[in-house]
Length: 254
Image (cartoon, rainbow, N blue to C red; front, side, top):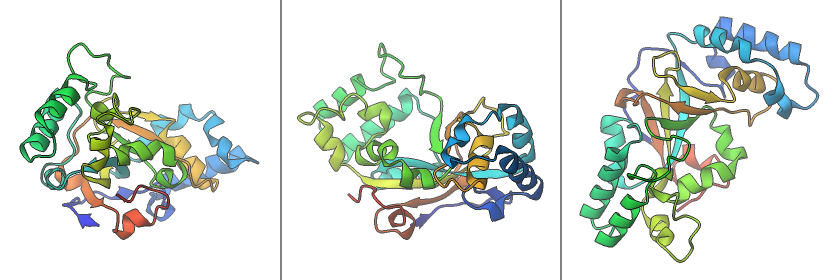
């Protein structure tokens, strides 16, 4: 695992590690979990907890939440994340990734132009769920273990969904090239959900914490984070062969 800056004085909360939960938050979460009395823990997503989300976020104010970004990186891209952090998805980011891969000989002229013209952010293309202007993460690293299908493509095809989405189901096209570029990578980052940015969390932060409290390890939330993540909030980048990556079974290894 390659450490990055991670130079923050703010306390970091990890949904997978209850010892990191601040006392008032832990008290509320465990009380809510006791009130739930679920016979089937996986049904935590059906609990009506939305009215407590604002309270949970308020209790997290001043803290950072550990989150995970699944992707596939060339070495120079990993270096850029360590130096500059995670950027918001937009046309400039897609162009930069394609141009730098092309300049280093990873993509031909034709491949670069095909990927650029068919990316999610290309002019005239349908906006697939409005992915622009955000960084996509998960709150729980356990999600990678228990929901392999959700992470598999992100770790198997270079470029992120914005670049590979049109090609990954075509076994005879450019998909094979995208499978060969870079290495699978788990980027651990810190996010501040109390910061401005209209961040979206599904199902919710409170559902994730309560799911963990009742013992459901796969409890997770997808985070659509609307701010760039600075380098000091990048904890690490783990590749196959690193303990932090290999501890999660079933992930792509090449």
